[in-house]
Image (tube, rainbow, N blue to C red; front, side, top):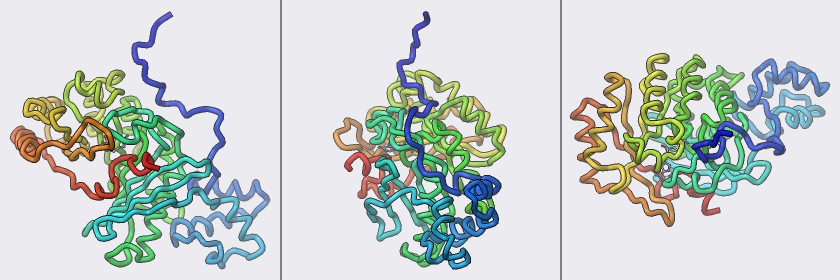
Length: 373
Ligand code: SAH
């Protein structure tokens, strides 16, 4: 009998024996939506009208769906547009242009999404799992473990809810739309691969089949599940890949991102480079700056070398000032050390930005709101 050297939980499997979230039109492609109605003894052509209400008009009140026969409206809406989640709380920051919502799903699971309106774009940060199984010690979500995978529709609904408040002019700055989506809320998107790909398809399908967003404006962020990165590279959807590296050496990364004991820095960065080579999409390297942990000058040099070894101009480094989670021993880097880190990366030709810290005053960091609740 062989002993598994990696005591991590098996991350690719969904917990078994759970009740599934309600089936929703966003879970299905157009043919599937039609079929579902037909199977329920309802007219299939109504699927397109329902899709137009949901994705095109962003309507969720059945009373506004006046093109559906009143007698059948409830049944049609019940079949394809069941309620998926209830907002528990919304917190605002940055004069209302950052809005974080805590949602309760049908089974009581809590997830968060954040809308961030900038001058030139509006980004929705969405969750893909309730909880997370990756156990990164500096991340609030990582501390509670995985509850369950979210369904495609539960992921999409977070974006539609954001698009709705933008369309209604409820966010300062006037009527607008959601232009970008980042999978940087709770969960490891590539551990819920099928539902996440489904969600990306719904976001990018032209209306009324989907929201009609550009795949280039969708970012999937991962701890680095190598086989899934390679699979994503072959999907033919040019999303931006973000790799949460956080350390350039295995010794430290094993600690900060425990899945590294299964997929080393070299394997992970190779997979990210393959993603670039196959899609032509520049990869974003996420690096949360932690004082005295991963922010030393020699690590900046090593990070640049590890990236440059694979080629030039294929990555962009995004330094994230650590948002300390309650009771954690980690804190953000000194501004001086941060500047030196940036200087060293740039000296070796690595394009680098420091992320702005929107919403840190509303527990904007990963999973902090749900953790408090
Ligand atoms: N599981 C995915 C996506 C979710 S988190 C991933 O790990 O990429 C999105 C980003 O926020 C990741 O880079 C993650 O490491 C980072 N992050 C988590 N907790 C943080 C914190 N307290 N401060 C700053 N960044 C954090």
